[in-house]
Structure formats: structure tokens, C-alpha cells
Length: 299
Image 1 (tube, helix red, strand yellow):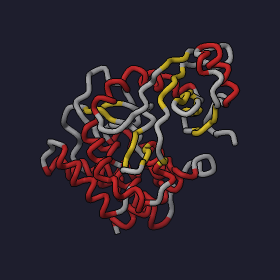
Image 2 (tube, one colour):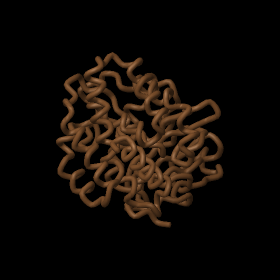
Image 3 (cartoon, rainbow, N blue to C red):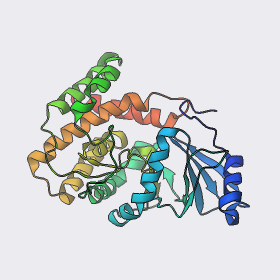
């Protein structure tokens, strides 16, 4: 199935040709397309590597951000991240830079039921708290994550207005409450940008890796913390926030406001998660889960 957002076709034949020209020692390995995201395609190379290739122009710059910053990010967090180990460049057949990264083993969390995600809520909170350290002035800019909610209000309000019934009302309530919460007034911190369940890997001992740092940026951590509603049930979400509070230096009033903004971001994510159910059934399931969590919490 072709992805509705992709501008070029990325398949095993293309990757083999790129490897043959630029990394010939890898070109004879078995290749298998393992993921087709919104922006990138992942092709497994043998047992221990994978090629990560942008499939639309918007993602090309994001991959360069990963190349530059993931070596630093890997030193901050307690789980694995896909630090590039080799670089690829554009050719006549493929227009953008691409990377070879380690193959990180685990089950994508959007394929797991909530009861299998809930046990590692605290691990994810600790990972995000570790990541949310002060970022440099030249951290990547991102107009869609880490910004004040007011900057996204026009777009999000339009999307939420299209959702019917009690579910749509609850999502709009969550968004309005976040808008009314005090804004982030501290230094910008590093953000993953998109830590939804599809970008998290679970292993035998809980959270194993965090993937896809294409939206890496700095700002208000609320957009990252929206994952508490995307991933977990009510009790695990409380565990998540308790562990994040323990690992952060935020006073109670700032944490309360942060949670309100994070819940608003979760509501904003729902229409995006539901946008392409055929191409991304796992994300559509996450969107439905988040909706149910928000409705129950605001009832």
C-alpha cells in the first residue's frame, strides 16, 4: 500500500542500490521494509542495522537534525536511541540524505495493549525527565511542538471542531483548559517532539528504546508529556506523573500547569492520530485510546 503522504517510493531495491554505491560492504545483506511512518521509511539491513530514509521533502531536514544531535541525546537518556552509525547522500535516483542506524530490538508500543504498556509508565517518565534538560540556543526549531498552545490554537480548534458528540466535547474542553493554564516560563528544554507509542519500543524488562527523533526540538515539555494519555491507563498515568515530579525540579504549581497543558496537547494529537487509519492502524488505535482516557478523566 502506498502511503498518502510520501513523495518518493522507498523500497528494498532502492536501498540496495544506495548501499551498493555508498556502503558496498552492506549491500549483500538481507533487506526488509519494516516501517513506513509519516515522514520516513525504515529498512532493516541484516540483523543489526537499519536504513532510515526520508520519504518526503519535509523530513529531509529533520534527518540532518538527528545526525547532529542524537549523539548528545544518547548521553542524556537511560534507554537506547538510534544514533546514526553511517551517512548516505543524495543520488540521481534518490534526492535526500539518509542514515544507517542500529537495529533496536523490541515491540512497538502501539502494537501492545494498555495493560502491557502500563508497567513501564515510570520508566518513560524517568526517560523524559532526563531528556528534558536545558537545551542550547541552536537546538532545532519546530513550529509544531514545544510551542505555546496559543500558537497552535487556530489549527487545533478547527480540527477539534469537526469531532462530534461527547468525545469531541471532552477534547475541546481539554484544549480550552490547557489554553487557560499558566504558560511555560522557564528555560527551553530538550524535547523528543513525538514520543507517542509508535515511537517507543518495549522489551522484556519494560521500555527498551525511544525512536524517531525527527521532531527533536526545545521548548515547553508539555507536548512530550501528552504521551501519558496516549500510552497509559488512569493508575499508570498517575504513576507517570509522580515519577516525573520526583525527577524534575518543578514546584507543585508549575507541575499542575504543565499537566493541564500536556492534557491539552493529548487532545490536539487525537485528530492527527486518527487521520490515516488505513496507513497507520496502530496510531488510530492510540487516538481512540487517548480519546477514551480524556473523556473518562473529564466526565
